[in-house]
Length: 103
Image (tube, rainbow, N blue to C red; front, side, top):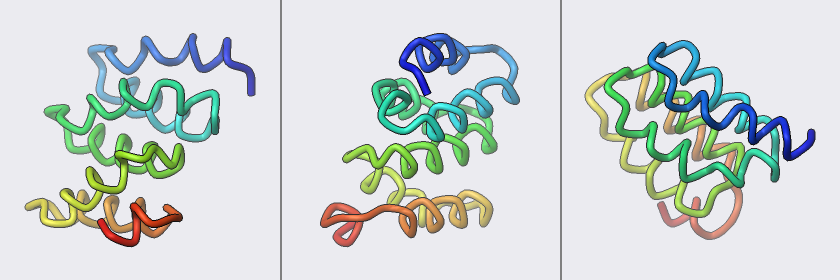
């Protein structure tokens, strides 16, 4: 897990294909601290027009344990689609610390 790989994946967060954006978010989430450096770019995907991409962003942020991820994930617990609510619940379940407990 090298910072160079995360930097190569990050531009794919803006790819026109939803599968690529989703995979980029998931990949950065799995890269730990190296991927977390791009948490802001992943957070932008929380407003993506594709549900799959938004779910991937929620899960990636929880894996990164991005501090702002808990509040964002909690907001998606009230989403209209059950798949998004489930992704948010899984994300919050994977978080640790005070922020996740109070989200």
